[in-house]
Amino acid sequence: MDTHILDVVSLLDYEDLENVILVGHSYAGMVITGVADRAPSRLKHLVYLDAFLPDDGQSISDLHPGFVAKLRQIANERGEGWLVPFPEEVVNPRGGPLYGISDANVLRWLKERLKPHPLACFEQKVHISNPEALKLTRSYIWCFVRQGVRAENWGFFREARKARELGWRVYEVESDHDVMVTAPEELSSLLSKIR
Image (cartoon, rainbow, N blue to C red):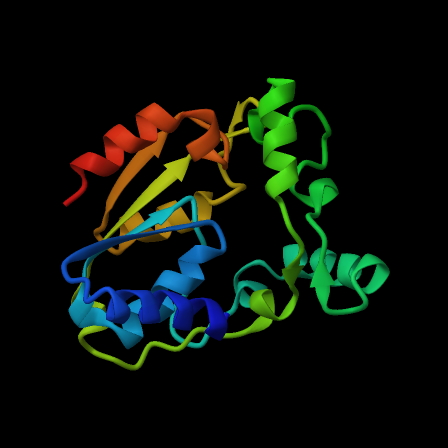
């Protein structure tokens, strides 16, 4: 995860970017949290897009231990103990359309882009020590459909609830997890309104 955080911080620095609205989808909620700690002066707003929402010292394993236990098993069985091939059986345990995508061409396009991910990213803890990072405005976008049904009490429901409790603006989109694929127009319209 440190590598992913450093990549984003380096881009912000190299391009001399300021007032950035940084969006993190899914795992990248961890990444944008780390980026905010290291480069808060370059950022204006963090948007957690159906994403993990960590506190200081938490990993995805801390937030969702059962999920990461399954990923660890997959890494041990098919990824030499350190690499997680895309775990379709974990993210889509009931079968059917992956992330609600029924168009075969779109699904093929998506699956070609789903690459293995290092297990350590799910186990590394994010650290928040910069008080300026805590001053940044934050929003949460919850994609509330999972496999065709409202995802109360599963998916990223807990993260959306936590964001509400923290007083963040929380937006709901009637889409499955990969909203950028399943509802791109609605997502881009919503993102353009977030300031």
